[in-house]
Length: 629
Image 1: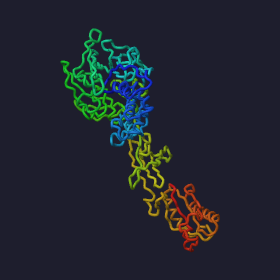
Image 2: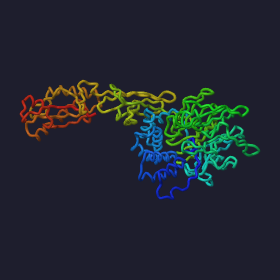
Image 3: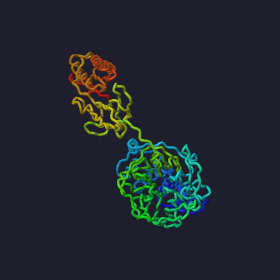
Image 4: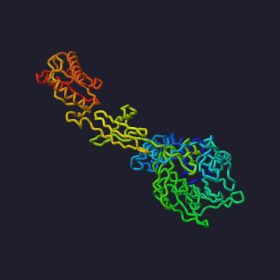
């Protein structure tokens, strides 16, 4: 749920705004400042009908973004950037990029994120590669038929689970999203992965504030959980209440002794507690002083006397300048958490990081697209022994809980690469790449996109040939096999050479046409038969076409301007066709050849008053050879 992802919680009692016919910007801003985003969005929507200032459009986009209504957020941000892009703050670039990704518009989202980061992003390519390289894949099952309960914050609770939810409809609405305040519930999970026997915790745990994200000791007698603070603090123009971590004890069959942890504060939030199985460490997320981004992951040591060490930030390997939240640590020390600062599919993704030492973790790994969507995915918890677990996601529009089965990532045999110009090494979008089996059968072909890359799925223990084609280029080819054990990733640099780089007699003109420049072919006056001199020239062309069996050409014939235009057109068509037939008779496939007669319409030499010398007429009587592909 968005309100628990962010740092602050706000409690407001704003009376009905829309009794008035007209809403002022001041009234809308008051709602926005109090984080009553639903009512604020309604007010701003009314205002933008007549007034579209930068602040109004930005606030409207933020209202929708914070309640993960990404289509509406994109609409508002889009107008903001169309009108005021040069003066929009950088952090709005980040939100707009993630809103675009949330609508699966990765092309525009990546372009916007690239502007924010200062380097290129390609989310589909990244997710494809990372999904292939993750150690596990996941099979998911939503845990409730009602997808609007707002369930998240799941944790293990003996043989049950606990989670936070807005399903307590008797509670008053929370201004952020006009939904009830959060309470903690326990439940069992049936064989179909559904939540059953759902029961709220007692009133000593569930108050009229928000409660969420419980974590329990191994014996089930100690619980840590979140509760929003009692005291509202003025931060800038806002009055807000922070999230705190509380501890409760299970005594004589009931929860009691609820106390706030000493590092909770009215000045910052601490949330999403996770207690390790040995009870010695408590991980959590916070925006306390020293935080690197909007929210970082911290840890405290718990002494035998129950005292807590000073909170320790997990550092820049884990934490970014954005949000890192919902820590979960396995018995072997592997950390799972959610982040929108590390590269991912958009918005919050689930990551894992192996433990290197007591204080260090390895570089986080995105868990891939079998679990991460373009929306928020978070709150991952794992039963390592059974390879089962749970997580939360708002991919359907509201927060929902999912159960998953974790499987070893299936072996995939893939070949991937890119097509480049041999001389310039520039990528060649629009090239065609074909995959053949060892018998020469065409298995698959793809048209390379603007990134110049290609990928084919293959099978183990087989041999393949791959060829890259591009108009005006010599095809490149490579052979490979998939006889190795495990995954086979073959990175092929398919560098193709242009015909005009490979052959001196081939030249590319300024207008883009590619011509084979041969000695001129001469025809007798009014004749179209191939003379011995012409045959010698055409033999050079035969050799070139046999050298490059994928080359296709057009033979163009031109006449001088003597005789009528109609006569000359017919004559030129016959001469071009005669040259084509000569090539066919000498072993060149007809389908690779075209012929066309231009008559006198394209003379090389234009004579004054059409009074050419014999030599000039001879020059205009010619054949041209243009490469088509």
